Image (cartoon, rainbow, N blue to C red; front, side, top):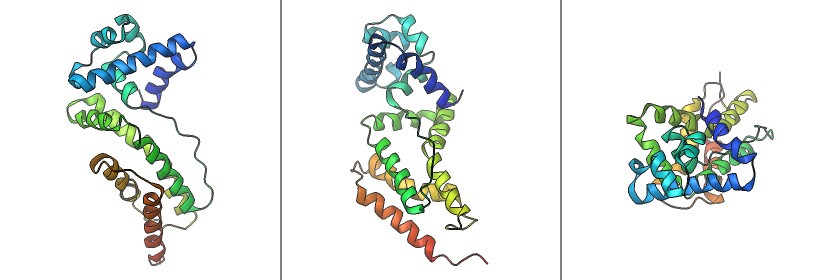
Length: 205
């Protein structure tokens, strides 16, 4: 099951119901976060979450069938991005996509999410989730670069994966490793530097 399908499956029953059900979801999410902060990821189980949230275990299982579902719903507040559209200006589109990533990284649960994804080496389900999170989180950036290639603003042989790493990597470094804020100027410098280098590259023969 894809990440988007998993998130939709978890979110729809709550989003479409009354406030009592929404409170149930928030209670479970808070329970998971509290357990992780106090005792680490290993402390998260359906039984422990149910007790922490004051709910029946069957209720927790019904909406979060797996332990990974519990962790992801509590930590990865996945927002399905809007339909991608281009303004026709590469710099504007790149800035928009990096701003979107910046907002995602500003979430206070990012450190816990990074730690969770770091366990993917030992968990096949998390490995797949890691790949899906990366793909979905950078899809708009990839499409923006592809559009730049189509408009001949970027070289046809541009390595998309390397370019995405170059554009998005500084944001991850600043937020996850340096624990520093990401402001408008930081994003602007990334985009400006990339565009200057792209414009100075010799035209294709």
